[in-house]
Image 1 (cartoon, rainbow, N blue to C red):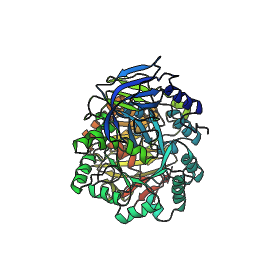
Image 2 (image 1 turned 30 degrees about the vertical axis):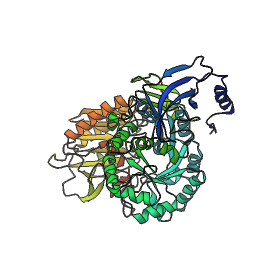
Image 3 (image 1 turned 45 degrees about the horizontal axis):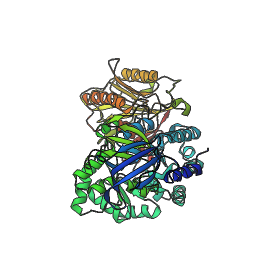
Image 4 (image 1 turned 90 degrees about the vertical axis):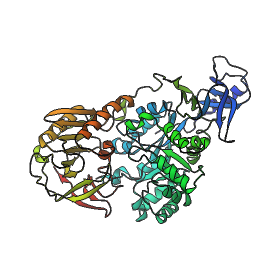
Length: 581
């Protein structure tokens, strides 16, 4: 696997110096710009010279040569660095390309991405080819290296092998290890995970925690073992505890945890007014949550909650870049940095009018620049419609387990005793219990139980979108469940709602059954229809997409349905193993 080791080659650096010497013209000149200078923590005026993808000068001087140079008078505009999303899960029905393109319209020009879906669904060569090619987008694309599957899969040792982890950690575009959803194993003595953390630290890369509800003692232990940051604080007191133990704290505002306003209120109450060790994230929200913006929305909330304006912008830019040790390239407008710049109409309005990403216009005067993000041939990376060489039958839908899964909210599930007759082909709509099956995408195994709390009158749902890419089946009517599966199979993957033998709504996911190939604006429309139809059928929580994703996720309590079977998270045991078909 070959990658360019340096951001700019020697000949590029010589060309940058040539611009300063007056021998070469800049490609863009921003004159008399009022910009955020984060060194002086002031709004200052300067001329900004850009050559291709790099800022080559910020100061009072003007270039001697301006041939074929785009010159803009920025007297009436405010310039801030491109925003950074430090905690992206770019596989929540959307894909990394569509997320990058959409986010750029709101000024987010850098993403630090989860690699989980790549590890679970692609061969290593395909995954790295995709990561490499996404690096050519205007958006700066960086990645994590996961150390565990976040569930109980059958071949975890093979997928999360030392060889694979080492390959990811050594990749230049990988900035951190984690997030550490498997941290209980680490505390229990998993020395291989500890070795990977040590390797990440040796490479000057950070470790992202995942410590919801962690005690002060646990936070201290995880700091000793190498954690640097955590995004799971849900109260101001939890922010305080993390800061006290030396963490950088990433304040979350996502579709299942829209916590930022309350966190900032709590911090104000507690007198937390130092923001250098804080930044903000959206934690892979569903696409509809992004309708009102991405990082710009978080900055706006921070300003409205009384965070000093410069700190609000720093929490979305330079604080993140410093944390990841890349402030020499990103997060500020200064000589030598990548030319990611947002042009604002006012200091108080963080949604940009125009956006430069790597020196390319991706948004201009409020209008999206077409073709700024070239299309991707997903087939090259093994991301294509699913192919099934097996069928679902009524024999697969036999239910005899003595207990089922009860939903407490969108993502928390508990065991409960089943008291209804589950031997029938159709359940009553007088209660909120449904048939629930997780079945191997290759048809080799299945696990059947009852799901309480998801819906009251849902006839059938079939989904290839799940934590592991296996198939989820939920519903009251077994015949409609079979038909929903059949339709999902015809789509090559997706989410299908079926009722009385007819499709109610469907959301195709042609990229390996886990992602749409549509722009996010179009995906939102399909997602809204699915949401609305589920609500009509009794889904009462905030985010059904995350419900589907986290049914198998063992980093959350209390009981999960996994490839290995029904899993007790707290006791780390398989209660009922999956059944071979």
